[in-house]
Amino acid sequence: MKPLPHSDHTDGTRFFNPPYLRRETAGSSRIRPLSILKWQWNRPKSDWPSWIENPHPTGDPHAGVPHGGVQLTFIGHSTFLIRMPRPDGTITTILTDPIFSQRCSPLSFLGPRRVRAPGRQLADLPKVDIVLVSHAHYDHMDLPSLRALARRGDDPLVITPLQNARFLRKTGLRRIMELDWWQAVSSAGVQITCTPAVHGAARTPFDHNKSLWGGFMLRDETGHQLFFAGDTAHGRHWALIRERLGAPDIALLPIGAYAPRALMASVHATPEEAVSGLRELEAGRGIGMHFGTFRLTDEPMDEPVHRLAQALRDRGLPPDTMGVLQHGECRNMTWSPPERA
Image 1 (cartoon, rainbow, N blue to C red):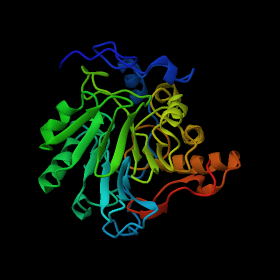
Image 2: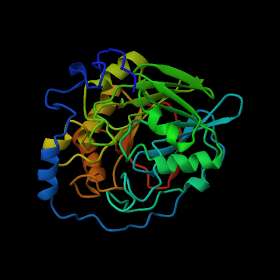
Image 3: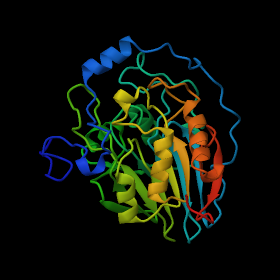
Image 4: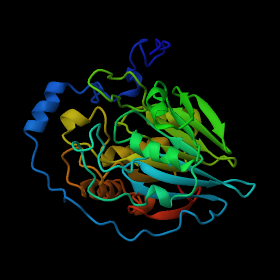
């Protein structure tokens, strides 16, 4: 791997979360192996079901999308199908952090196993124009799913933060573009800007933070914006993104995998922190993700959704300020609701 160019988030060999992005209590993104072993040894027994059936999927991801809005299909975890209409009548189709595999693990027989099927199967999706891969963790960069997408012949443009292309080239996907934070590219009528996140990345015990992590701001030709946060802790990046790129109409924000806080506060946001992030972004509305698919941490399966609803009540916000889609749900959403959060 070539030496990294020096910046405020790399020392030339590894990436890091610069202090100006972190909250005072967030600490480092480095989770020590000994801490992980102690946690795993003392981990409470899971109350997650071994399997749960999804509701019957609603909506049609092949249907047209009305102008003045966007279509979202929640497939599970951090995987969304996003369809953005263009003034010429075409639709740009974007897939985020696609994972359709049974496990998010380097091994097919060991590691976190999904407790529900993907809300939609890859074979049932329309042609994908753009794929966003936020970072190298196995629950976000699933190479088997990306290989399956390559075999479909869609030939999408894959956009990912720095030093992730070396993994993605193994999938057979040909068009891969790496972006640093704040770099942007335009494709199929959508401007995509890579944004900071407070997180980390690794695929082995030996490549900690050798690749960058981030989120993506999507801006269509009418100036409306959708923000996909990737995977992140709570941080000062929310306000910085708002300041530099403007407020998104819709924000897709992580709400799960936050317990125990002593380990996870540096890499994953709680539902309450997601609501704070939504307000700092000044987003029109929020959609929760990163919950209810793989048991990665210790909170009960349904707790993130319940805590999200309670956080809105505690702040006196309307219940539709931020919610979740059912697995497999396809919904047309209008831009610019009357009031922002």
